[in-house]
Length: 420
Image (spheres, rainbow, N blue to C red):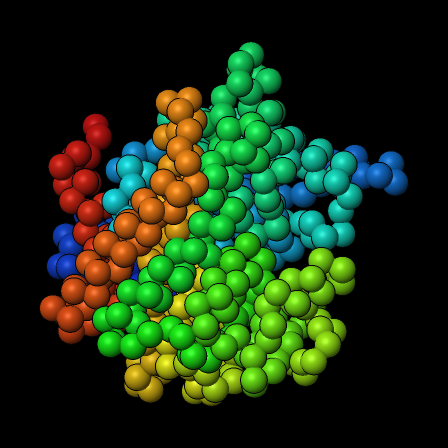
C-alpha cells in the first residue's frame, strides 16, 4: 500500500506482508488479493472533550471496517497514546482472519482513540467515550459493526457506548457492543475469555508435542485481563511462572512467583513492580529470559529483528495482537521456536463476544459452565485444524492459521461476486 501513506505503520506493514505471503501460497487471483489488502471503510473523527480543569481538548478517533464478506464487522476499541490509522487498519485486518479462522459470522473491524487513559478522570473518559460513540454512530449497530473492549478500555467503556447508542434509538440495544457488565446484558466468562483461550491452545500444543504443562517454565509480558488470567490458570495447573511484567516494569524469580500473593500486591500497589521476594526486571529483558513458554500479552511489535536472536523460549504464545514482526518471525523459525500466532492464540475474546452477541439478540443467557465448554471446544477445534494444515503444507503455525482464515474470506468473495 505504498500509495496509501495514511496507513503507514509497522503493524500495518506486518499485516499486509503476512497477507501477501499467504495469498501467494493460496494462489489467490489478483482481484481477490487486492480487495483483501484494503479496508472496506475507514472513519476518522475529532472528539472535543471538556476536561476537568475547564479547558477543551480534542482527541483523534478512528473506526475501520476491514471486510464484510462473512457478516457484520467485529473488533475492539483501544484507548492509547500510540493509536493511529495504520495500527487500527492492521488490527481490523487481523480481526477478519481471526473471526474467519474461528468460524464466526463476522468480518474484522477495529477502533481507537489517541489518548492516555491512565491520566484521565472517570468523568473525562465517560465524556470521551460518549462523544466518540456519537461521532461513529452511523458506523456501528448489532447487524453492522459490534465494538468490544481492547487495550485501555473495559466493561465500563462498553456500558457507556451501549447507553449512548440506546438513547439515540429510544430503546435498549444490548447487541451493539460486547464485553459489557453482566447486569446490562454482558456474558458470563467474557472477561476471562482471551486468557482462557491462550491456555486452551497451549493444552493442545503440549498434547500434540507429547508433553504436559505441569512444571513448564513460563514468562508473561502483561498482567491484565489476558496475561493475568493465563498466569493464574497455568500456575494452578502446576506451571512455574518465573517472570511477569506490566506497564511499570516486571518482576522475576527463577524459582517461580506466587501468583496468589502477586494478585494481592497488585490490588494494593496497582502494579507488579515492587513485589517482595522477586527481582526487578525491564519489559525488554523479560522477553529474553530462558523459558519453556513466553506469552507476550501487552502490545504489538515487541519481538523484532533486533531482539529475536536473543529470545530463548521454546514456545511463544501471542496473547497480544501483532507482537512479532515478519523479520523476527523468520529468525525464530531458524531457531526452531514454535510460535502460536495471535489470530489463533488470543481468539478466545472474540469467540465469547460472539456468544454474548447471540445471547443479547435472543434475550436468553447461558451458564458460565456452558460458555467455558463451548469456548474450549472451538479453540481446540481451531488449533487442531491449524496444526494439521501446518503438517500437511509444511509451514509454520502462523502461515497455516492465516491460510485457513484468508481462504474462507476469499471463498466468500468468490461466491458473493462483485457489486455492481
